[in-house]
Image 1: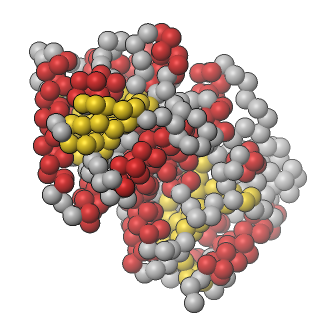
Image 2 (image 1 turned 90 degrees about the vertical axis):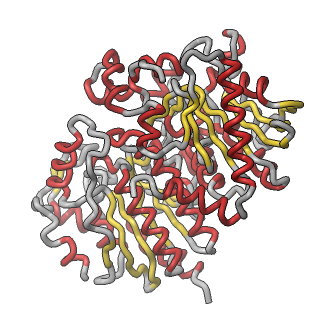
Image 3 (image 1 turned 45 degrees about the horizontal axis):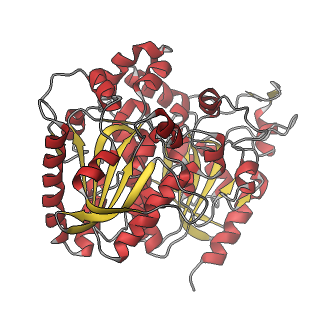
Amino acid sequence: MSLKDFFKGLFGKDSQEPRICKKCNEEIKYSDLKANHIICPKCNAYMRMNAFERLEAICDAETFSPVDEELTSNNIINFPEYDEKLEKAKKATGLNEAVVCGTCSIGGKKTAIFVMDSAFMMASMGSVVGEKITRLFEKATTEKLPVVGFVTSGGARMQEGIISLMQMAKVSGAVKRHNDAGLLYIPVLTDPTTGGITASFGMLGDIILAEPKALIGFAGARVIEQTTGEKLPKGFQRAEFLLEHGFIDAIVDRKDLKDTLSNLLAIHAKA
Amino acid sequence: MSNLTAYEKVAAARGNKRPMGGYFIKNMIDNFVELHGDRRFGDDGAIVAGVGFLNGEPVTVIAMERGDTIEERIKRHFGCPTPEGYRKALRLMKNAEKFNRPIICFIGSSGAYCGIDAEERGQGEAIAENLYEMMGIKAPIISVIVGEGGSGGALALGVGNRVCMLENSVYSVISPEGCATILWKDATKASDAADVLKLTAQDLKEFDVIEKIVDEKDLTNEEICDNLKKYIYEEIKELKKMSTKELLDQRYEKFRKIGR
Protein backbone atom coordinates (compact mmCIF):
# COMPACT_ATOMS: atom_id res chain seq x y z
CA MET A 1 0.00 0.00 0.00
CA SER A 2 1.30 3.44 -0.78
CA LEU A 3 1.66 5.98 1.97
CA LYS A 4 -0.91 8.24 0.33
CA ASP A 5 -3.47 5.43 0.02
CA PHE A 6 -2.93 4.44 3.62
CA PHE A 7 -3.50 7.91 4.91
CA LYS A 8 -6.28 8.71 2.49
CA GLY A 9 -9.48 8.68 4.50
CA LEU A 10 -7.56 8.82 7.74
CA PHE A 11 -7.29 12.55 7.56
CA GLY A 12 -10.61 13.99 8.54
CA LYS A 13 -9.45 17.55 8.46
CA ASP A 14 -7.66 19.35 5.68
CA SER A 15 -3.96 19.14 6.41
CA GLN A 16 -3.37 21.78 3.77
CA GLU A 17 -4.63 24.57 5.97
CA PRO A 18 -2.15 27.23 7.02
CA ARG A 19 -0.53 26.73 10.43
CA ILE A 20 0.49 29.17 13.09
CA CYS A 21 4.07 29.04 14.35
CA LYS A 22 3.93 28.82 18.13
CA LYS A 23 7.22 30.64 18.46
CA CYS A 24 6.68 33.74 16.29
CA ASN A 25 2.88 33.52 15.99
CA GLU A 26 3.06 33.98 12.22
CA GLU A 27 0.52 32.21 10.08
CA ILE A 28 2.38 30.15 7.49
CA LYS A 29 0.98 28.90 4.20
CA TYR A 30 1.09 25.09 4.17
CA SER A 31 2.97 24.93 0.85
CA ASP A 32 5.70 27.19 2.25
CA LEU A 33 5.89 25.08 5.39
CA LYS A 34 6.06 21.83 3.44
CA ALA A 35 8.81 23.17 1.19
CA ASN A 36 10.76 24.03 4.33
CA HIS A 37 10.44 20.64 6.15
CA ILE A 38 7.70 22.02 8.46
CA ILE A 39 10.22 24.52 9.80
CA CYS A 40 8.92 28.05 10.19
CA PRO A 41 10.32 30.09 7.27
CA LYS A 42 10.02 33.27 9.35
CA CYS A 43 11.81 32.30 12.58
CA ASN A 44 13.31 28.85 11.84
CA ALA A 45 11.44 27.17 14.70
CA TYR A 46 10.99 23.42 14.25
CA MET A 47 7.23 22.93 14.16
CA ARG A 48 5.85 19.52 15.14
CA MET A 49 5.37 17.12 12.24
CA ASN A 50 2.42 14.78 12.11
CA ALA A 51 2.95 11.09 11.41
CA PHE A 52 2.04 11.45 7.76
CA GLU A 53 4.52 14.26 7.16
CA ARG A 54 7.28 12.37 8.94
CA LEU A 55 6.75 9.14 7.04
CA GLU A 56 6.63 11.00 3.76
CA ALA A 57 9.86 12.81 4.58
CA ILE A 58 11.75 9.68 5.65
CA CYS A 59 10.45 6.64 3.75
CA ASP A 60 11.44 5.98 0.14
CA ALA A 61 8.45 6.72 -2.11
CA GLU A 62 5.67 4.11 -2.07
CA THR A 63 7.50 1.77 0.31
CA PHE A 64 5.63 2.25 3.60
CA SER A 65 3.43 -0.64 4.64
CA PRO A 66 1.53 -0.23 7.93
CA VAL A 67 1.10 -2.92 10.60
CA ASP A 68 -1.43 -3.16 13.42
CA GLU A 69 -3.14 0.03 12.25
CA GLU A 70 -6.54 -1.23 13.42
CA LEU A 71 -5.62 -1.41 17.12
CA THR A 72 -7.52 1.06 19.28
CA SER A 73 -7.50 1.76 23.01
CA ASN A 74 -10.15 0.78 25.51
CA ASN A 75 -10.83 2.50 28.79
CA ILE A 76 -9.42 -0.43 30.74
CA ILE A 77 -9.50 1.11 34.21
CA ASN A 78 -12.66 3.11 33.56
CA PHE A 79 -10.85 6.42 33.93
CA PRO A 80 -12.94 9.62 33.84
CA GLU A 81 -13.09 11.49 30.52
CA TYR A 82 -10.75 9.02 28.79
CA ASP A 83 -13.26 7.83 26.18
CA GLU A 84 -13.99 11.43 25.21
CA LYS A 85 -10.28 12.26 25.00
CA LEU A 86 -9.66 9.27 22.73
CA GLU A 87 -12.52 10.20 20.43
CA LYS A 88 -11.31 13.77 20.20
CA ALA A 89 -7.75 12.68 19.45
CA LYS A 90 -8.92 10.28 16.76
CA LYS A 91 -10.96 12.96 15.10
CA ALA A 92 -8.22 15.57 15.28
CA THR A 93 -5.49 13.35 13.86
CA GLY A 94 -7.29 10.77 11.75
CA LEU A 95 -5.19 8.16 13.55
CA ASN A 96 -6.34 5.23 15.67
CA GLU A 97 -3.60 5.76 18.23
CA ALA A 98 -0.54 7.89 18.97
CA VAL A 99 1.93 5.72 17.08
CA VAL A 100 2.05 4.53 13.47
CA CYS A 101 4.09 1.38 12.85
CA GLY A 102 5.15 -0.40 9.70
CA THR A 103 7.96 -1.31 7.38
CA CYS A 104 9.56 0.77 4.65
CA SER A 105 12.80 1.38 2.84
CA ILE A 106 15.09 4.25 3.75
CA GLY A 107 17.79 4.86 1.16
CA GLY A 108 16.98 1.45 -0.28
CA LYS A 109 17.44 -0.37 3.05
CA LYS A 110 14.40 -2.18 4.37
CA THR A 111 13.62 -1.21 7.95
CA ALA A 112 10.87 -1.35 10.54
CA ILE A 113 9.70 2.12 11.50
CA PHE A 114 7.51 3.70 14.14
CA VAL A 115 6.41 7.31 14.25
CA MET A 116 4.73 8.85 17.28
CA ASP A 117 2.33 11.75 16.76
CA SER A 118 2.11 14.30 19.56
CA ALA A 119 -1.24 15.58 18.31
CA PHE A 120 -2.76 12.35 19.68
CA MET A 121 -2.96 12.87 23.47
CA MET A 122 0.64 14.14 23.54
CA ALA A 123 1.65 10.73 22.19
CA SER A 124 1.40 9.34 25.70
CA MET A 125 1.95 5.59 25.99
CA GLY A 126 -0.97 3.43 26.96
CA SER A 127 -1.35 -0.28 26.32
CA VAL A 128 -1.94 0.08 22.57
CA VAL A 129 1.09 2.30 21.98
CA GLY A 130 3.17 -0.12 24.07
CA GLU A 131 1.72 -3.15 22.31
CA LYS A 132 2.24 -1.74 18.80
CA ILE A 133 5.87 -0.80 19.43
CA THR A 134 6.51 -4.15 21.13
CA ARG A 135 5.01 -6.02 18.19
CA LEU A 136 7.12 -3.96 15.79
CA PHE A 137 10.34 -4.88 17.61
CA GLU A 138 9.27 -8.54 17.72
CA LYS A 139 8.51 -8.49 13.99
CA ALA A 140 11.83 -6.78 13.28
CA THR A 141 13.62 -9.42 15.37
CA THR A 142 11.95 -12.27 13.47
CA GLU A 143 12.55 -10.66 10.08
CA LYS A 144 16.05 -9.44 10.98
CA LEU A 145 15.24 -5.79 10.30
CA PRO A 146 16.66 -2.66 11.89
CA VAL A 147 14.23 -0.35 13.69
CA VAL A 148 14.07 3.41 13.22
CA GLY A 149 11.77 5.20 15.65
CA PHE A 150 10.60 8.80 15.64
CA VAL A 151 10.01 9.46 19.29
CA THR A 152 7.88 12.12 20.90
CA SER A 153 5.78 11.69 24.00
CA GLY A 154 4.57 13.24 27.20
CA GLY A 155 5.30 9.91 28.95
CA ALA A 156 3.18 7.06 30.24
CA ARG A 157 -0.58 7.60 29.79
CA MET A 158 -2.11 8.42 33.17
CA GLN A 159 -5.56 7.33 32.00
CA GLU A 160 -4.45 3.69 31.88
CA GLY A 161 -2.88 3.69 35.34
CA ILE A 162 -0.46 0.91 36.19
CA ILE A 163 -1.04 -0.81 32.84
CA SER A 164 0.64 2.11 31.07
CA LEU A 165 3.59 2.10 33.48
CA MET A 166 4.15 -1.58 32.73
CA GLN A 167 4.43 -0.81 29.01
CA MET A 168 7.82 0.75 29.76
CA ALA A 169 9.13 -2.64 30.91
CA LYS A 170 7.35 -4.49 28.11
CA VAL A 171 8.78 -2.37 25.28
CA SER A 172 12.25 -2.31 26.89
CA GLY A 173 12.19 -6.12 26.93
CA ALA A 174 11.35 -6.25 23.22
CA VAL A 175 14.12 -3.73 22.45
CA LYS A 176 16.55 -5.95 24.36
CA ARG A 177 15.60 -9.08 22.42
CA HIS A 178 16.00 -7.15 19.17
CA ASN A 179 19.42 -5.96 20.35
CA ASP A 180 20.46 -9.45 21.42
CA ALA A 181 19.70 -10.66 17.88
CA GLY A 182 22.43 -8.28 16.67
CA LEU A 183 20.06 -5.78 15.11
CA LEU A 184 20.24 -1.99 14.90
CA TYR A 185 17.84 0.41 16.61
CA ILE A 186 17.99 4.16 16.04
CA PRO A 187 15.57 6.36 17.99
CA VAL A 188 15.26 9.93 16.73
CA LEU A 189 14.16 12.09 19.65
CA THR A 190 11.89 14.94 18.65
CA ASP A 191 10.17 17.70 20.56
CA PRO A 192 9.05 16.84 23.21
CA THR A 193 10.34 13.50 24.59
CA THR A 194 9.75 13.23 28.32
CA GLY A 195 8.92 11.05 31.32
CA GLY A 196 8.51 7.33 30.88
CA ILE A 197 9.51 7.40 27.24
CA THR A 198 12.89 8.97 27.97
CA ALA A 199 13.11 6.39 30.77
CA SER A 200 12.56 3.48 28.38
CA PHE A 201 12.87 3.05 24.62
CA GLY A 202 13.84 6.70 23.98
CA MET A 203 17.22 6.14 25.60
CA LEU A 204 17.84 2.56 24.49
CA GLY A 205 19.18 2.98 20.95
CA ASP A 206 22.48 1.81 19.51
CA ILE A 207 22.64 5.31 18.10
CA ILE A 208 20.42 8.06 19.50
CA LEU A 209 19.73 11.05 17.24
CA ALA A 210 17.77 14.18 18.07
CA GLU A 211 16.37 17.18 16.29
CA PRO A 212 17.79 20.60 17.17
CA LYS A 213 16.38 22.20 20.33
CA ALA A 214 14.04 19.26 21.03
CA LEU A 215 12.96 19.08 24.68
CA ILE A 216 14.25 15.78 26.09
CA GLY A 217 14.12 14.88 29.76
CA PHE A 218 12.72 12.73 32.53
CA ALA A 219 11.21 15.06 35.13
CA GLY A 220 9.23 18.08 33.98
CA ALA A 221 11.16 21.34 34.13
CA ARG A 222 8.43 23.09 36.14
CA VAL A 223 8.27 20.22 38.62
CA ILE A 224 12.03 20.41 39.13
CA GLU A 225 11.86 24.14 39.67
CA GLN A 226 9.03 23.83 42.18
CA THR A 227 10.59 20.88 44.03
CA THR A 228 14.13 22.18 44.31
CA GLY A 229 13.64 25.95 44.10
CA GLU A 230 16.64 26.02 41.77
CA LYS A 231 16.74 28.22 38.72
CA LEU A 232 17.05 26.12 35.61
CA PRO A 233 20.13 26.72 33.46
CA LYS A 234 19.68 28.13 29.96
CA GLY A 235 18.90 25.44 27.41
CA PHE A 236 18.05 22.92 30.16
CA GLN A 237 16.76 19.60 28.75
CA ARG A 238 17.22 20.69 25.16
CA ALA A 239 18.89 18.36 22.67
CA GLU A 240 22.08 20.46 22.85
CA PHE A 241 22.13 20.02 26.65
CA LEU A 242 21.89 16.24 26.29
CA LEU A 243 24.61 16.18 23.66
CA GLU A 244 26.89 18.18 25.94
CA HIS A 245 26.23 15.74 28.81
CA GLY A 246 26.89 12.70 26.67
CA PHE A 247 23.40 11.21 26.41
CA ILE A 248 22.78 11.41 22.66
CA ASP A 249 25.02 10.67 19.70
CA ALA A 250 24.19 13.54 17.38
CA ILE A 251 21.83 16.37 16.61
CA VAL A 252 20.72 16.26 13.00
CA ASP A 253 18.98 19.02 11.06
CA ARG A 254 15.59 17.92 9.81
CA LYS A 255 16.54 18.40 6.17
CA ASP A 256 19.49 16.00 6.64
CA LEU A 257 17.69 13.29 8.62
CA LYS A 258 16.84 11.02 5.72
CA ASP A 259 20.40 11.10 4.38
CA THR A 260 21.88 10.51 7.82
CA LEU A 261 19.55 7.57 8.48
CA SER A 262 20.21 6.12 5.01
CA ASN A 263 23.92 6.36 5.64
CA LEU A 264 23.76 4.79 9.11
CA LEU A 265 21.52 1.96 7.86
CA ALA A 266 23.98 1.28 5.01
CA ILE A 267 26.97 1.29 7.36
CA HIS A 268 25.24 -1.22 9.66
CA ALA A 269 23.90 -3.45 6.86
CA LYS A 270 25.20 -7.00 7.14
CA ALA A 271 27.05 -8.40 4.16
CA MET B 1 -7.81 -7.96 54.50
CA SER B 2 -8.15 -4.36 55.60
CA ASN B 3 -10.98 -2.05 54.64
CA LEU B 4 -8.86 1.01 54.02
CA THR B 5 -9.80 3.28 51.11
CA ALA B 6 -7.30 3.72 48.29
CA TYR B 7 -6.10 7.04 49.68
CA GLU B 8 -5.84 5.66 53.19
CA LYS B 9 -3.56 3.03 51.72
CA VAL B 10 -1.50 5.75 50.04
CA ALA B 11 -1.16 7.40 53.45
CA ALA B 12 -0.26 4.06 55.06
CA ALA B 13 2.30 3.32 52.35
CA ARG B 14 3.93 6.70 52.99
CA GLY B 15 3.54 6.39 56.77
CA ASN B 16 6.25 8.03 58.80
CA LYS B 17 6.87 4.88 60.82
CA ARG B 18 6.34 2.38 58.04
CA PRO B 19 9.32 0.05 57.66
CA MET B 20 11.23 0.51 54.40
CA GLY B 21 13.90 -1.53 52.68
CA GLY B 22 16.47 -1.22 55.44
CA TYR B 23 14.13 -2.81 57.97
CA PHE B 24 13.56 -5.86 55.82
CA ILE B 25 17.27 -6.28 55.19
CA LYS B 26 17.96 -6.08 58.90
CA ASN B 27 15.26 -8.57 59.84
CA MET B 28 15.43 -10.95 56.92
CA ILE B 29 19.03 -11.17 55.78
CA ASP B 30 21.85 -12.77 57.76
CA ASN B 31 25.48 -11.59 57.55
CA PHE B 32 24.50 -8.67 55.32
CA VAL B 33 27.41 -6.78 53.78
CA GLU B 34 26.48 -3.42 52.30
CA LEU B 35 28.21 -2.60 49.02
CA HIS B 36 28.50 0.97 47.84
CA GLY B 37 28.87 3.02 44.71
CA ASP B 38 28.09 2.93 41.01
CA ARG B 39 31.78 3.01 39.89
CA ARG B 40 30.82 5.93 37.66
CA PHE B 41 30.17 8.99 39.74
CA GLY B 42 29.01 8.39 43.31
CA ASP B 43 27.10 6.47 45.93
CA ASP B 44 23.39 7.06 46.36
CA GLY B 45 22.01 6.86 49.89
CA ALA B 46 18.46 6.19 48.68
CA ILE B 47 19.52 2.72 47.54
CA VAL B 48 20.94 0.33 50.11
CA ALA B 49 22.40 -2.72 48.42
CA GLY B 50 24.57 -5.67 49.28
CA VAL B 51 24.88 -9.40 49.77
CA GLY B 52 23.98 -11.84 52.53
CA PHE B 53 22.04 -15.00 53.32
CA LEU B 54 18.31 -15.66 53.30
CA ASN B 55 17.73 -18.90 55.23
CA GLY B 56 21.26 -19.93 54.28
CA GLU B 57 20.74 -19.06 50.61
CA PRO B 58 23.21 -16.44 49.28
CA VAL B 59 21.27 -13.48 47.87
CA THR B 60 21.81 -9.98 46.54
CA VAL B 61 19.48 -7.39 48.03
CA ILE B 62 18.71 -3.97 46.60
CA ALA B 63 16.47 -1.75 48.68
CA MET B 64 15.10 1.75 48.58
CA GLU B 65 15.56 3.45 51.95
CA ARG B 66 14.59 6.92 53.16
CA GLY B 67 16.08 6.79 56.67
CA ASP B 68 14.54 7.40 60.10
CA THR B 69 15.88 10.72 61.38
CA ILE B 70 15.52 13.99 59.52
CA GLU B 71 19.32 14.16 59.04
CA GLU B 72 19.34 10.70 57.57
CA ARG B 73 16.35 11.50 55.37
CA ILE B 74 18.12 14.51 53.92
CA LYS B 75 21.23 12.39 53.31
CA ARG B 76 19.12 9.76 51.58
CA HIS B 77 17.02 12.48 49.89
CA PHE B 78 13.85 10.93 51.28
CA GLY B 79 14.35 7.65 49.47
CA CYS B 80 14.22 9.08 45.97
CA PRO B 81 17.03 7.40 44.02
CA THR B 82 19.42 9.37 41.83
CA PRO B 83 20.86 7.96 38.59
CA GLU B 84 23.79 6.71 40.67
CA GLY B 85 21.38 4.66 42.79
CA TYR B 86 19.95 2.90 39.75
CA ARG B 87 23.43 2.34 38.34
CA LYS B 88 24.64 0.90 41.64
CA ALA B 89 21.62 -1.42 41.60
CA LEU B 90 22.43 -2.58 38.09
CA ARG B 91 26.11 -3.10 38.90
CA LEU B 92 25.18 -5.37 41.79
CA MET B 93 22.56 -7.23 39.74
CA LYS B 94 25.32 -8.01 37.22
CA ASN B 95 27.48 -9.22 40.08
CA ALA B 96 24.61 -11.43 41.28
CA GLU B 97 24.24 -12.81 37.77
CA LYS B 98 27.95 -13.66 37.62
CA PHE B 99 27.67 -15.71 40.80
CA ASN B 100 24.21 -17.05 39.98
CA ARG B 101 22.72 -15.51 43.10
CA PRO B 102 19.01 -14.65 43.39
CA ILE B 103 18.16 -10.93 43.61
CA ILE B 104 15.60 -9.39 45.96
CA CYS B 105 14.48 -5.78 45.39
CA PHE B 106 12.55 -3.80 48.01
CA ILE B 107 10.66 -0.86 46.52
CA GLY B 108 9.28 2.09 48.45
CA SER B 109 9.75 5.61 47.17
CA SER B 110 7.64 8.50 45.94
CA GLY B 111 9.70 8.35 42.75
CA ALA B 112 13.06 8.93 41.15
CA TYR B 113 14.97 11.95 42.50
CA CYS B 114 13.89 15.11 40.77
CA GLY B 115 16.59 17.74 40.20
CA ILE B 116 18.81 19.51 37.71
CA ASP B 117 21.78 17.33 38.65
CA ALA B 118 19.77 14.13 38.17
CA GLU B 119 18.78 15.27 34.68
CA GLU B 120 22.38 16.23 33.88
CA ARG B 121 23.51 12.75 34.79
CA GLY B 122 20.77 10.99 32.88
CA GLN B 123 17.94 9.99 35.21
CA GLY B 124 15.88 8.79 32.25
CA GLU B 125 18.78 6.85 30.78
CA ALA B 126 19.56 5.20 34.12
CA ILE B 127 15.97 3.96 34.55
CA ALA B 128 15.74 2.84 30.91
CA GLU B 129 18.99 0.90 31.25
CA ASN B 130 17.66 -0.96 34.29
CA LEU B 131 14.39 -1.95 32.61
CA TYR B 132 16.36 -3.20 29.61
CA GLU B 133 19.11 -5.02 31.49
CA MET B 134 16.81 -6.55 34.11
CA MET B 135 14.98 -8.33 31.30
CA GLY B 136 18.21 -10.22 30.57
CA ILE B 137 19.71 -10.86 34.03
CA LYS B 138 20.34 -14.60 34.26
CA ALA B 139 19.42 -14.92 37.92
CA PRO B 140 16.02 -15.06 39.63
CA ILE B 141 14.62 -11.61 40.52
CA ILE B 142 11.90 -11.02 43.10
CA SER B 143 10.58 -7.47 43.53
CA VAL B 144 8.56 -6.46 46.56
CA ILE B 145 6.64 -3.20 46.89
CA VAL B 146 6.79 -2.39 50.61
CA GLY B 147 5.72 1.28 50.54
CA GLU B 148 4.81 3.70 47.79
CA GLY B 149 5.68 2.40 44.33
CA GLY B 150 6.17 5.73 42.60
CA SER B 151 6.11 5.39 38.81
CA GLY B 152 9.22 4.79 36.69
CA GLY B 153 11.51 5.30 39.64
CA ALA B 154 9.91 2.26 41.29
CA LEU B 155 9.66 0.18 38.13
CA ALA B 156 13.44 0.54 37.70
CA LEU B 157 13.79 -2.16 40.38
CA GLY B 158 10.52 -3.86 39.51
CA VAL B 159 11.26 -6.06 36.50
CA GLY B 160 11.16 -9.33 38.42
CA ASN B 161 10.11 -12.93 37.79
CA ARG B 162 7.82 -12.35 40.72
CA VAL B 163 6.39 -9.04 41.86
CA CYS B 164 4.60 -8.92 45.16
CA MET B 165 3.10 -6.17 47.29
CA LEU B 166 2.43 -5.68 50.95
CA GLU B 167 -1.28 -5.30 51.54
CA ASN B 168 -1.19 -1.56 52.21
CA SER B 169 1.47 -0.63 49.70
CA VAL B 170 0.51 1.14 46.46
CA TYR B 171 1.99 1.21 42.97
CA SER B 172 1.06 3.88 40.46
CA VAL B 173 1.98 5.57 37.20
CA ILE B 174 1.58 8.98 38.86
CA SER B 175 0.99 10.24 42.41
CA PRO B 176 -2.67 10.85 43.31
CA GLU B 177 -1.77 14.52 43.90
CA GLY B 178 -0.20 14.82 40.44
CA CYS B 179 -3.18 13.09 38.86
CA ALA B 180 -5.68 15.34 40.64
CA THR B 181 -3.77 18.41 39.51
CA ILE B 182 -3.86 17.32 35.88
CA LEU B 183 -7.41 16.02 35.96
CA TRP B 184 -9.20 18.56 38.14
CA LYS B 185 -6.52 21.28 38.58
CA ASP B 186 -6.87 20.61 42.28
CA ALA B 187 -4.31 18.62 44.27
CA THR B 188 -6.67 18.43 47.24
CA LYS B 189 -8.79 15.94 45.30
CA ALA B 190 -5.99 13.38 45.64
CA SER B 191 -8.33 11.01 47.43
CA ASP B 192 -10.63 10.82 44.39
CA ALA B 193 -7.61 10.45 42.13
CA ALA B 194 -6.35 7.53 44.22
CA ASP B 195 -9.66 5.77 43.53
CA VAL B 196 -9.62 6.27 39.76
CA LEU B 197 -5.92 5.33 39.40
CA LYS B 198 -6.50 1.76 40.71
CA LEU B 199 -3.25 1.69 42.59
CA THR B 200 -3.86 -0.71 45.48
CA ALA B 201 -2.34 -4.16 45.81
CA GLN B 202 -5.80 -5.64 45.30
CA ASP B 203 -6.26 -3.72 42.03
CA LEU B 204 -2.86 -4.78 40.74
CA LYS B 205 -3.51 -8.42 41.60
CA GLU B 206 -6.75 -8.21 39.65
CA PHE B 207 -4.89 -6.79 36.64
CA ASP B 208 -2.39 -9.65 36.92
CA VAL B 209 0.45 -7.16 37.37
CA ILE B 210 1.51 -8.78 40.66
CA GLU B 211 1.43 -12.39 41.83
CA LYS B 212 1.03 -12.05 45.55
CA ILE B 213 -0.30 -9.83 48.31
CA VAL B 214 1.32 -10.20 51.73
CA ASP B 215 -1.21 -9.57 54.50
CA GLU B 216 -0.70 -6.76 56.99
CA LYS B 217 -3.97 -6.54 58.94
CA ASP B 218 -3.56 -7.14 62.67
CA LEU B 219 0.03 -8.27 62.18
CA THR B 220 3.19 -6.81 63.70
CA ASN B 221 6.05 -5.72 61.47
CA GLU B 222 7.98 -8.79 62.64
CA GLU B 223 5.15 -11.10 61.59
CA ILE B 224 4.77 -9.39 58.22
CA CYS B 225 8.51 -9.65 57.67
CA ASP B 226 8.47 -13.37 58.59
CA ASN B 227 5.61 -14.09 56.19
CA LEU B 228 7.30 -12.14 53.42
CA LYS B 229 10.54 -14.01 54.07
CA LYS B 230 8.75 -17.35 53.74
CA TYR B 231 7.18 -16.27 50.48
CA ILE B 232 10.45 -15.02 49.01
CA TYR B 233 12.29 -18.17 50.07
CA GLU B 234 9.67 -20.48 48.54
CA GLU B 235 9.66 -18.50 45.28
CA ILE B 236 13.45 -18.54 45.07
CA LYS B 237 13.36 -22.32 45.43
CA GLU B 238 10.84 -22.52 42.57
CA LEU B 239 12.72 -20.10 40.32
CA LYS B 240 16.02 -21.92 40.86
CA LYS B 241 14.48 -25.03 39.32
CA MET B 242 14.08 -23.19 36.01
CA SER B 243 16.65 -23.25 33.22
CA THR B 244 18.13 -19.87 32.29
CA LYS B 245 15.95 -19.76 29.19
CA GLU B 246 12.81 -20.58 31.17
CA LEU B 247 13.69 -17.94 33.73
CA LEU B 248 14.18 -15.21 31.10
CA ASP B 249 11.14 -16.26 29.07
CA GLN B 250 8.95 -16.25 32.16
CA ARG B 251 10.08 -12.73 33.07
CA TYR B 252 9.61 -11.49 29.51
CA GLU B 253 6.13 -13.04 29.23
CA LYS B 254 5.07 -11.71 32.61
CA PHE B 255 5.39 -8.15 31.29
CA ARG B 256 4.68 -8.98 27.65
CA LYS B 257 1.14 -10.04 28.42
CA ILE B 258 0.19 -6.79 30.22
CA GLY B 259 -2.03 -4.78 27.90
CA ARG B 260 -1.66 -7.24 25.03
